[in-house]
Amino acid sequence: MKSSAKNSPVNFLIKCCSMGSSALLTQLVNDEGPLILDGGLATDLEAHGAKLQGDPLWSARLLHTDPQAIRDAHYRFLLSGADVITTATYQASIPGFISHLEVSAECARELLMSGVHLAKETVKGFESGQRRPLVAGSVGPYGAFLHDGSEYTGAYAEQMSVEVSLIYLKELKVWHRPQIDCLAAAGADLIAFETIPSIKEAEAVVELLREFPNSKAWLSFSCKDQKCISDGSLFADAVRVARRSTQLLAVGVNCCPPDLVEPLLDSAGPLHTSDMSWVVYPNSGEEWDTERGWQTSGKPSAWTPDLSHMWVKQGAALIGGCCRIDPAHIAELRGQLKGR
Image (tube, rainbow, N blue to C red; front, side, top):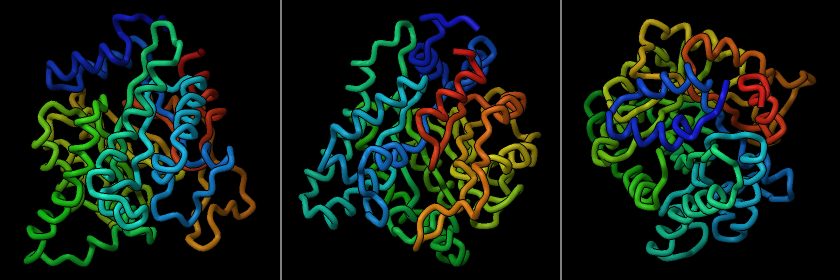
C-alpha cells in the first residue's frame, strides 16, 4: 500500500469534517489500510521511570510535574508508526486537578488543554515525510475520576432507576462538558471517548457531542465478555446508541482481552456500515487487580498482531493497543498491517 499526502490522516479528517460522514474513513482504509493508534501511554511512561500506580490522576499528573516525559512517550509511539496519538488526559478533570494538585480552576483548565498542546508539539517536531499523525483528545469515563475501577464495571450507572435516569444523564453531561470543551478548544483533531462502561454514559456523551458541532470523535467501550459491555448491556445495543450521532467516525472496544474483539464485533456485525467504522485497541490480555496491579496468572500475553487482520476484515478502521501495549508492540502491529 502506497502512502500519499493526498490520503494522509489529516487530509482524511478535513474531508470527513466537511462531509459529516465516516465513509471517507472506509475509503482511506481501502486505499491505505487502517489508521494505527498508539498503545498504553501509562505503560510506556512507567517503563521509563514514572510512578503512576495508585495515583488518582494517573498519567495526567505528569502534565503538571513532568510534561517532557509525556512528549517523549508520544514521540516513541510516533517512531513506532502510530498514525494517531492520544493525549494524557484520560484521568484528567478540572475537579480532579483542583483536588489532587491544589490548583485553581483556571490552572486546571490550562492543564487539560496542555495535554493537546504537548501532543501537537510532538507531532509538529516529528519528521515523518508525508505521514502527518493525528491527535486524539482522550476523555475517560466518570469511573476513571472515581478511581475505584468502576470504568470496568459501570457500577456507578447500573443502579440508576428509570425515574432518575434523566437527571443522571444531565449530571454526566455536566461532568464531561468541561473536558470536551478544553480538548476541542486546544485543537484536538478528534475526541476519543474511551473505556465507557455503560449505555447511560454513552447516551450522555452522544448527546453532549452535539454541543460541539465542529468536533469528530470515536466512542469505545469496556466489555465484560463476548457480547456485553461492562454494565451488562449488549454491545450491539451500545452500537445503536452510537449510531445516533453523525459526528462519531467510529465505535468499538478498548482495554479488553484481544480474543474478545472478534466475537464482540461479530455480535454487532449487522450494524456495521460505511457510516460507522470500528475502532479497536485491546490490552495485552493480562488481568488488572486493584491491589496488586497487572497480573499474568502465569499466562503469556494474548497480544498477537496477526489477529488484527481479522479485525480489518470485520471493518476496523482504527486499530491500536491499550494497557500493557508499548511502542514495540505498535511497531509490530504496523508491520503486520502495512508492512512499514
